[in-house]
Length: 98
Image 1: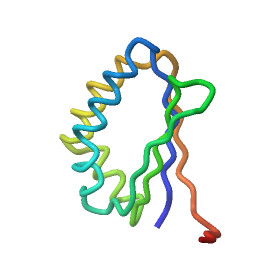
Image 2: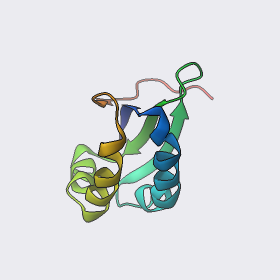
Image 3: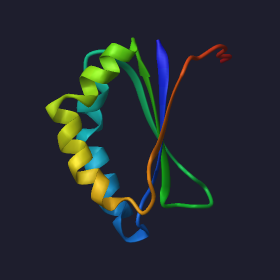
Image 4: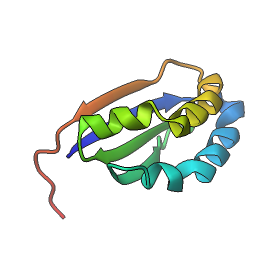
């Protein structure tokens, strides 16, 4: 399993549109094969900056999602809302303490 972190910065006037789309699609993303966890975070000081954290069984599952009609439809609505280039990282979780 690995973690995918995506940082997204939106036009402040488009934040509500992003949030509405995320709300509509979050369950479908989370239930996509290989996705084990999904969270959305918002920067406390830059309220137009968001981060998604998702856990995937393997990079192959993430790539399957990225090639899916679901991702393409989500991305088509999300991409025009950006005010900066998104950044993404794929990382391995080494330690988790609860």
